[in-house]
Length: 108
Ligand code: FES
Image (cartoon, rainbow, N blue to C red; front, side, top):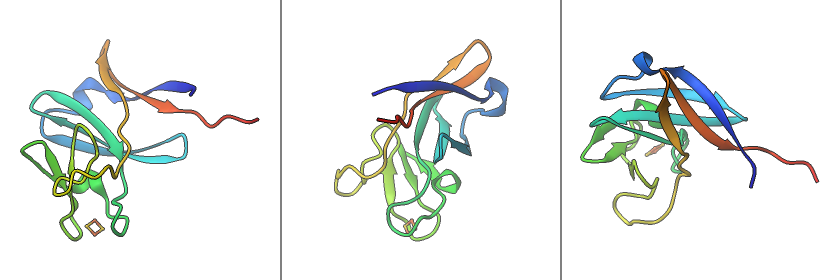
């Protein structure tokens, strides 16, 4: 799989306990900084498309603001069942920028 690194914002634009919704490579992605660590996952809830980036983060999980489904930040799994639900993406803080690695669409 081919991936591409994207600078999504300045480090100072995503402080601890903050989140953002970004649009990159045709995807909606929710990014979080929680307890100093960065996380990135699909930004639309698997239930009815709620905005994950606007969810409350607690104990390593984010709660969808619409009906309360919960996802683990580090895996995107459903917090109640452990079932894989949302894709997660490599994200890092590098030289003053937050960067995310996204699979690219390839033509055959
Ligand atoms: S849309 Fe997220 S819980 Fe319903």
